[in-house]
Image (cartoon, rainbow, N blue to C red; front, side):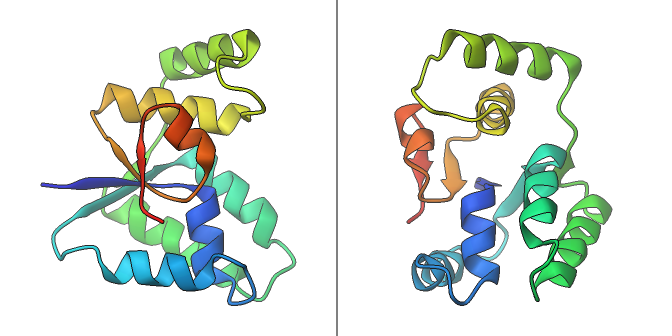
Length: 132
């Protein structure tokens, strides 16, 4: 089964019709076959929640959290993921990458995910395939 990691950039683009990447995100989502497993981390949803706090799509973030949580598709990074992410962050293995992305990379590698619903160039630089 194909597993795709949902990144903040992709989710915000999907929810925000004024986002420059909205159309590309919508197209990418429609191209995902039925049965694909969509997962993300609690850290990514925290970023989304912060970004959407004063936006009209705030309730969509909450609905997504509930759906992922109920479906067992919301990953809580382990203590090891946390430490490994911070280690990479401190070493600046990829320029200008935030800590949430570094932890995302660690989680993706740990559970063998190679594809991310995003166009964030940092995912490509880390060796992952991006969907738009």
